[in-house]
Length: 411
Image 1 (cartoon, helix red, strand yellow):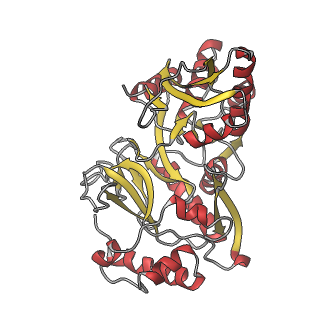
Image 2 (image 1 turned 45 degrees about the vertical axis):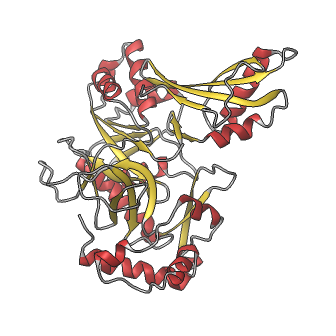
Image 3 (image 1 turned 180 degrees about the horizontal axis):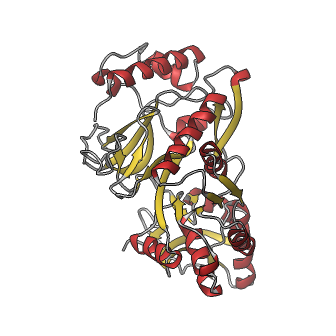
């Protein structure tokens, strides 16, 4: 699905704003001699933008609108100490809420629903995005945020919540707790809007069966508004995304060639109307494909297939983005451990588990060290790994590259 004339017109508006702001991408455009485009071929010749560009622009180098028009910032996690700061104008916030409202509507959610939101609030875009869309829909919001399962279940019963918004891991935990406590007949949930991490068909079926609800995949990333830029409908033939706000390409991540609909590759997104920090040809590193043809539901919005993974080395555990460099940085705080470590990611009982193996000498309290490392990972990244301390020299060595991350979930 090549870019339309209307979308080209919108891209030219963003090019003009970027050149005027003279920010990181504006400079790229100037260096490339670009002031506007008039065809799909010219659009596909525009330079890509990358996460590294966005980090280099820290703190406000992405800001394209005048500062007095910026009403909010959000941030993605910093993998090397520098997070990505995304400025939003009032229109950006409203546009995001409108897209999220559409997501709820596609899922059959109305202003008569009571929506319990469990993703986190703060600099990241999770909870507040779910809430803004629900409020624009006119639904009653129960803004719980993450954790505190006891309170979640109590409010779920007392408020008679009909929709749960969560990561798949937390949705599974809640469904299991509801089963253990024998309170399914007291829970009024009908639908679940699930985002932030990949989840298997088996996990989906377990949650759906445990709770007796319909589940919907929601897509998004902080750099491109946040969650709520796409969702699957009841036909479950891919996630509809909103091409009046976004233009999506699929490229070969090696050759960077634009691929035709139906072929798998890397998702590249251009924001068509974003004011605070527009992005042109942003490489997401998410792997999917554009579904060819029309959806049986009759909606005209194009569709992305389920996200199959990423082209880089990011790991996602319990909805948290984790990079090996983050683990290395944490281990450097412990002089007792050697430079060698190994991460094993397993999928046990429908839950992702990280086992972190580290080495130390025999004079150290192995159990105490493991507990301290686990607490530090929890404090820094947000989840608790299973840490196993072994004697120095037991982890494998290599004359080439050591395989430090072993993902056993897809073996």
